[in-house]
Image (tube, rainbow, N blue to C red; front, top):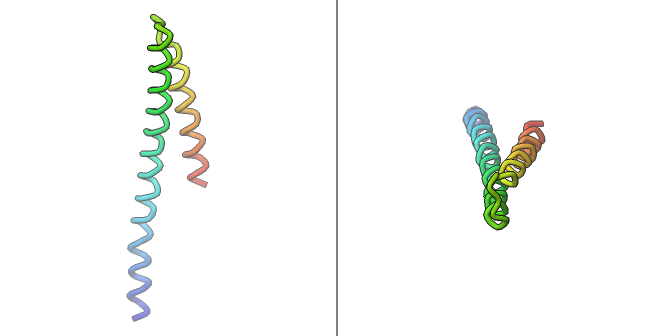
Length: 74
């Protein structure tokens, strides 16, 4: 029975890595989407003709999501 347990562990390793990395992708999309939505709402509230808050907050969202990605890869 011992070899079956090692086979199951070997099968779970790629699955665990897949789940980990796919969740990082969903996290990245969520962070960028939330910051972009907040910027859009700020631009809407300010009635600005140039969507400056959307641009700035979406870039901030990208930076924060990259931070979480790099932290998660270590």
